[in-house]
Length: 327
Ligand code: UFG
Image 1 (cartoon, rainbow, N blue to C red):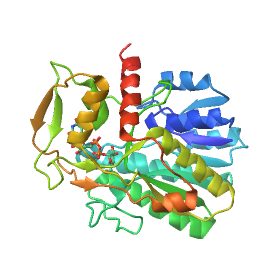
Image 2: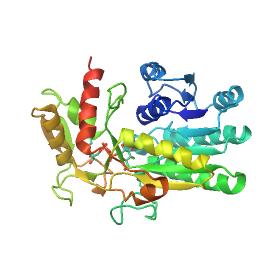
Image 3: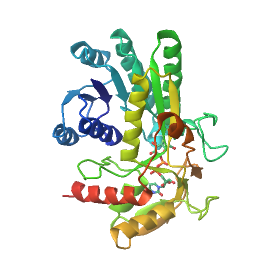
């Protein structure tokens, strides 16, 4: 049995769908503060899914999950706050939820003898890039509390491995994009801050705001590595298998090794939508590095993972999902 924290959220739900379609039994633990019960209802149609509402900040909530489900053998941990700007304004929220919440999860795992975890880490743990593409040897110097909180957890996991034999795979996501290929689930944040959904949501009355056109990049806009959410889900399944095979703690970048500028993404969105999208050029958004592109060779070699879906496919699935959300 696999426990997925944050399985009602964007990325977590895509992993849960992939696990259910593989015939795995899954428990989702989610506070539903940011995740959606509708997502859980949809997922339940595709396999054996038990949903437990609870908050990682309450040790008893997560202890109870292990107490009443003794067959949990591994955990995939998504539950976290993930907005960079919010983390700068309210670091307490990020450290308390992301770090303390994870400590509670790890306490409960150790108490019940569960020693395998796949963890959602982020490119934000690298901070301002000193070279590109970024490989796993790149220094980790986060520049905001969100990235700090994720790096702290990575460090805690290393110490827990040395002391208690807890094995972890930390997956450092670059920019996750797209939705389920059958439009059953997708990206659903309130408020939405991410590029692709914001471009697709733009209307005459609420034009898309492009943050910064004076960066030192190919066309002046920020360059990011957009990794398809279903490709990302597959990497988690491979990471679970990797741990089941008795492999050691490890960490991998998940990206495509291809960078796309905000202007390029905008053009793909217009192409997929088949119409002009209202655009407003705005000043830079604070804290955005010019370029973030992953060197994904390590995940390819050691996890045997190859992303297959390109940016256009991600935008197409995101566009189809927007239609479902607007129904
Ligand atoms: N952007 C816009 N307008 C918008 C939204 C975004 O111009 O309405 C631009 C941003 O300024 C940035 C690019 O589009 O240049 C991508 O922005 P996103 O907000 O989609 O993604 P980020 O690169 O800021 O953040 C992502 C994850 C974070 C993670 C970070 C790692 O969402 O959780 O990558 O660096 F921390």
